[in-house]
Image (cartoon, rainbow, N blue to C red; front, side, top):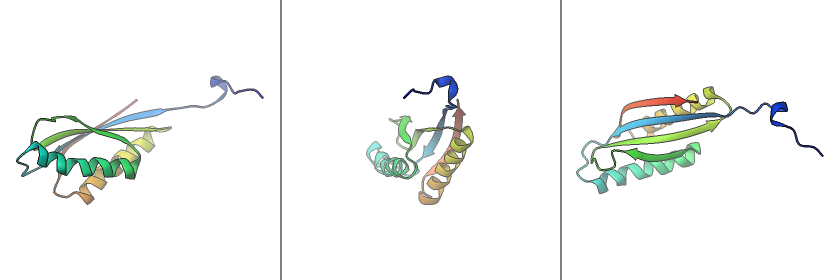
Amino acid sequence: MTRGTASSQQNHVAISLLKIKMNFLGCSSLKEKRGRLLPILNRLRKEFNAAIAETGLQDVWQSAWVSCVLVSNSNLVNAQSAEQILKYIEDHYPDEVIESHQLEQR
């Protein structure tokens, strides 16, 4: 048995980074913010099988940067998944405000 070489197989990997700035209105402590943020992160991991973490503004009570990495064989699939993630947050967590988001694709 012989292995196929990289040149004989079509192997395209698309990697996308979705960055979301979220506001947690009314939070009065970091503990309260994390109590509201962690269920969102855990749910997104399960629903979308994505690598996701709080990556910025960790010491700010009412804001957080959340980053999500999506990997597939198509930038289009990643863009659709990113839109689904944003819609999921808006639909299931209406009290949490998405201030901005950015999708980077490679």
